[in-house]
Length: 208
Image (tube, rainbow, N blue to C red):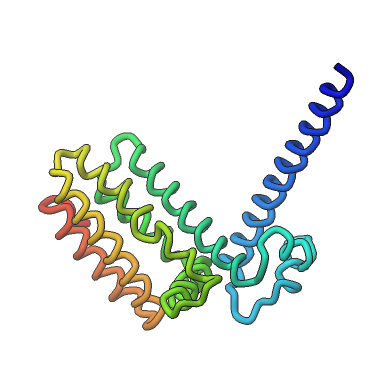
């Protein structure tokens, strides 16, 4: 009886420690995402990032393994946040899908998020070149967006295969125009191209 109680207490302590470590990791990741979104990445070191978010580079290494792995997690968390924004917009009563797309585009192209978007393309480029620590960013890079977008299209009456094709096209268009904006800085032209795409994608009556 005594031995079993002791083991249970030790197991509970271990579980609590793991939960605490996960919570701390999530807190650090959220702070890192916010910092990169506001300040960009440049040649940012783990030491400088740690100082900026109130921790040490050793703790960042402990929780994430390396600078590159942390950047991958920043990209994935940023993408997750963007999908949450889209889900909230889609659920907003009375908001047309085309207007939800416009609002998401406005959010994605806020100047304060330029550093975050640059990091996305930088890490994807590293992954496509086969850098082992960057490769995990490719997991779900398309599917995590296509699945909810296709589900929304199918709920609107689009056949499943066509819904997936349309969703994939939407993801490609948004990412391509984000890259265009970063490369050219021509906000007016890129916004006009997105508005044209929204009109083509959602059909008559969608034009802003």
